[in-house]
Length: 84
Image 1 (cartoon, helix red, strand yellow):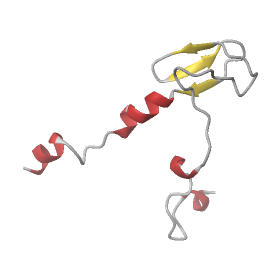
Image 2: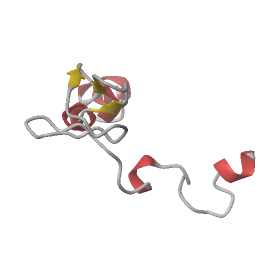
Image 3: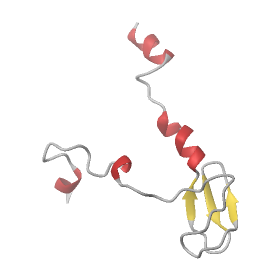
Image 4: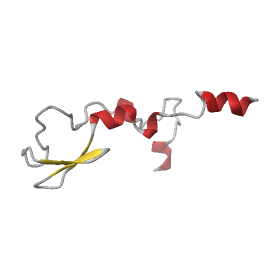
């Protein structure tokens, strides 16, 4: 099991989310149909939206573009301070 999750064959990380293809996102200012039940009533939070009928949760498209997962310590003013 662990061999399937490691880079045994010299390829990049096999479970990289960037390579998984199409994934459903909640897009602001558009009609969003729930992939679970097809309805359009949503409770929208800061990073996700939840269907008001079946509870299916989707990440916000805007949150994934600017979320905390996009920051790296290797870039920016902290990298210069750490190098000194």
